[in-house]
Image (cartoon, rainbow, N blue to C red; front, top):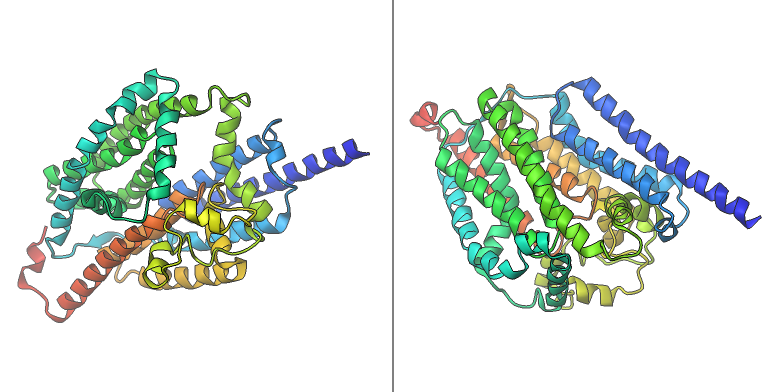
Length: 439
């Protein structure tokens, strides 16, 4: 009797997980039917399909299947709805493509790029100091990646209490803007190739740093952000530059798989459950854990993760790092020690109803902000769209990437948006004669 019930549950879980996968496959078909162009939104939906496939693999893994509770339909429906709400700006831009970007008359973007480059150069000594647990040792030593990762875990207890390494803080807070500016400069008629190369170098440093720390998440997030940024600007980049970027990008992605594979082998090769099972679990767990606990995690973090830095400004009792937060909310059935997608981060912090309201209001405002005029988008509108794409691509598998210290990236994005928006308003009231000669 028990065996029959168990088998029935396996069949039910597989049917629900397959339905969730099919929902994203049909979404991709519908999305491409509206406009056959492959763009950033297409990339995100394809990623969701891949995650759903790995969810099925993990669900049917003989060792990892016991990690999940029986699945239900409504949590899947809620998750799909929330992810689609987050994709609304991308869908709108896909269905209503614009022909050009109106270039702002400002040198501030170049100054920001120089700051980013200088800060990335200042990361090199820190990378070199970690050479003993760096790329070559991770590749050659089966324990190096695991050792580097454990060192970062041990340091987490002291994080958030003091400010260290200002260049690193600036660099990390501008990491998404780095990708944005790099591909934006590629769209200009008069290209500053030195500046573009400097930003490409900065992106490379951002991918290299987590490798030396034995972390895969930062590498994967950096690669996905670069891909999404390119797909957003691809239609505005010349054919020659597109050809070059695509081929260099393929080579870089292939090269990046080597350290990711090395880190994975280093951390899990000696585990009895096997590397394949851990990969399936790592990539596919988000939707499964959300289904189990996302709508009822056993409590609420009250914004302590998604709004951590903002809360700490007004409430000194807010946990300074994830170690303190996990101790404070030890009663939760689901926390940031497991993936539940960025949707899960919001439902755990605010509850499913409030999270739904936040998603609807925020993306409605974004839709109002990215409506083009005369077939042209302004740069601050592209920045708004880019931010929503980063949220979806970076957190669709894992968690809300702008949580904790990531709140600083929200601040830098908001400041750049405010500057570009205010600058445009000034130009509308006081147009410059030299406007037609820009770029």
